[in-house]
Image 1 (cartoon, rainbow, N blue to C red):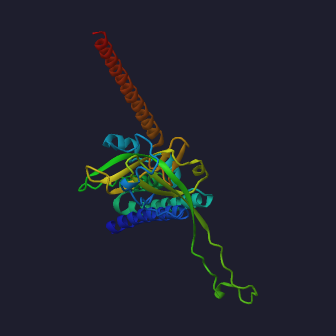
Image 2 (image 1 turned 90 degrees about the vertical axis):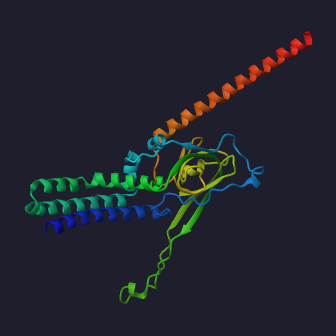
Image 3 (image 1 turned 45 degrees about the horizontal axis):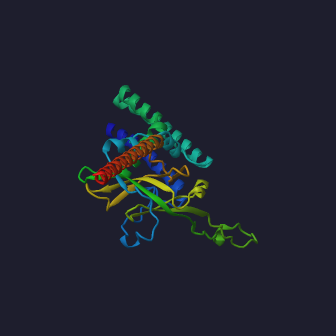
Length: 318
């Protein structure tokens, strides 16, 4: 009896997660993207024959990231943007999330009340508190699940992360029409003279971003179309954190975060994997280091040139 009640409460919690995944699937399906992946990474390959034809920005490549840096940029805990994303975008989606959370909390509290007669008050109190905080715990758990999925942490398979720095080749818009539903004659009222109606298909807009680094590697990503994507132009710098299996190279890319285009101040993606404040600070630190290295190299070249001139002047005087 006790085991059956515990299993019933656990099933209610799992149903709440399953329902939330349904809401997420509906949120993302309107943009034409699967729920399990934010981006479909289509290709990442080298095109040596086209290097001379493509315009490349110097210093753009894949920078390997340490585990400590990845933990800061792609945290396992839920950020404020992720909590906002899980709460829904439209009024209807927000209402569905609130209704579902309230329903699960109500059933969990009543189940904990009945369990208290079997297992005692302490365990029932813990169970009731757990279900009453379902609205807060559910997005935290789902954010952790998404972070683990994009980072691809498998104890038996080594993984590496890197900062893919490239430039925009193109940012195109793709329109997709959902399947059309034709109303059958049985859907009409009896005696209605109106003919069967055909529902207009909803239109879904996707932005396709093509990125290339200095080595000719390309990354094709997709994201829901927004007004901010109109500011993206070819040649702009793009920063993306990618994850791959292995310990040496990035041949097998298994995941990618949302991209950041600093020149246009645009975040490209449907789900905010990155801690955006930390990511901006990291990029600013990288730019300062690059400027310091370039200034040091110019200073060394200038010193070498002066030494060469002094040697030439000494030879002429002799």
